[in-house]
Amino acid sequence: MKIMLVGNGGREHALAWKLAQSPMASEFVLAPGSDAMMQLASDQIRVLRFDDIAADNVLALVTLAQEHQPDIVVVGPENPLADGLADKLKLAGICVFGPSAAAAQLEASKAFTKELCARYNIPAARSKTVSCEIEAARYLDTLPGPYVLKADGLAAGKGVIITDDLQQAKQDAKDMLCGQFGKASATLVIEEFLTGEEASLFVLCDGKTAIPMAGAQDHKRAFDGDNGPNTGGMGCYSPAPILDEAMTQTAMEQIIKPTLLAMTKEGKPFCGILYAGLMIDKSGPKLIEYNVRFGDPECQVLMRRLQSDLLPVLLACAKGNLEQLPPLQWSKEPAACVVMAASGYPGQVKKGAKIGNLHNAEKEPKTVIFHAGTKYDHKQGWLADGGRVLNITASGADLSSALDHCYNAIAMIDWPQGFYRRDIGWRAL
Image: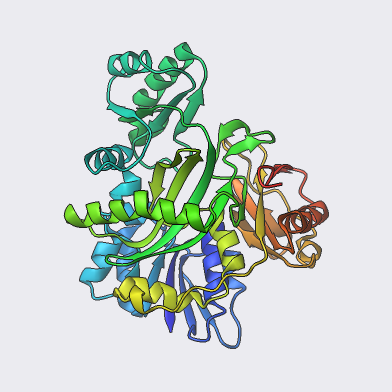
């Protein structure tokens, strides 16, 4: 089968790595892909790369799909989904894994999701959507700290600010409304601060049927001890101990299934992977937010643990026959991921620094390195080319062993300009 994969980050590298293991896979069409993903080429797998087509260039992606006629298009990032890529591919008669633009509002607009939760009594944090500084300040005055401010639109996982100081929160609201995150923060969602333990639940959906995958827990803050600014994610692990079978079922019944029914009633049935960020305390789970694609770096640990062939799973979602899918098989071994990022991330970073000794780091037992932001130079070797640069993943007999493998591999990597958190998995450990 021919697979077209949209995206070029660590998540897409992990998806391609897993899909390449399918006996059904014969060819990849990558847009834009990465130098690391090109290494998946083998006697079985042909790889074509179109690095001149950006992952958010919907028209060019549709044209590429029409030219190559893939058996399925797998969309990694959220922006092209919000811009209607899945809709246009379906109109062209091309099978696609990913939700329509209308269904992608679950991620593309936090205000939309909040309003949906309120209408259908789905457990979530109390909140208010605001579009002016005065309105923001008035609502902040009604809340106890800490204060949570979220850009309504897509902000690459960085559009959330949390502060304990009321005056700082008001200033942050003003800055966000004035364009700190561009158009994404022209409208804000201000919500109460939830306490408990955070976890991520991933659910496969075909518009009618929903099947939970595995849970994961990630670390959003840049520095050890959950300090520093929010990032796209500095590491994660799976399974999440708090998302046991009973809690997963509770989340499915109280949050996921009501959401999917609500979306169907609203004429926006959801097809793809629904990623629910949950806050769990003694009273049960509450929804923090939805994403409409695999998490990054959560996808990387899910792909390490998934033993089932991924390709039939994605095809079943796309074609609406998920109920015919046999139960997913998962490794009992935990998997962990530690992100190596460029100095300065999540702010401005310098690109082009050489990354040495990766070949030895990859020899660490049970370790796979996914490239999130690199490029290959034939003279210098691997170079840093982004904010989050490397995803070091490993499995192990227990989480501690998996993390030991990750950090052993990192110790071998020669990249002085990189940094990483040393406390990934602290909650579970």
